[in-house]
Image (cartoon, rainbow, N blue to C red):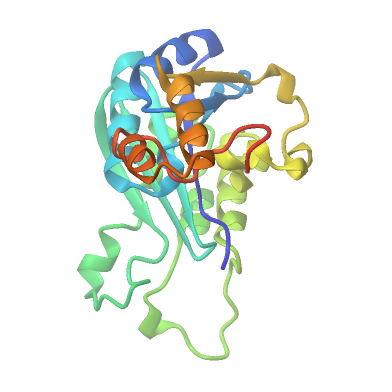
Length: 242
């Protein structure tokens, strides 16, 4: 099983402004990177559970609140790369590297609906980017058109995302991490300046997390279920709880 992760790339020159907006939008917690090349990276806890509705809600709302471009990037089991492109609260584009991953039989028109629009990256992010460079990274084929002896262009979809991040001047290391990776010892391999990251939490979220772990210790199943139903992720972690 490969990696699954989600992160949001926010076009902004202010970590503080993004952090203030994130606190109002997220359901639990999120780590925020310092500003780098006009981007603030947001690693949201609940979105990392691969909840498409939550990812779309968070990306749309954050884009609307900050009146800027927000792109939500998703990696699923290292086999699928997805992005949702928002500007000022509107979803402008959706990309899926493998829309037939779960066996859906798509005709060419349906397959091409998720191929991504390279022109948006030029219009909204950087006019010096070459359209061909974006399209080369995003290019993919339907499963039925791939021969048995054909080598995949990207064995891991994190590598595709890394290539796209490089082109957009986003820290390439962020193509490999989601929220829960911040609690793993190896995070220093991808985050060199963790002290400059901010942890944003929705009001009351930290108290609920402590209640969750206390309920687990007490084997209070009913309380654990109530807390998870309230929005806490069953994969919630802290610095000393894995």
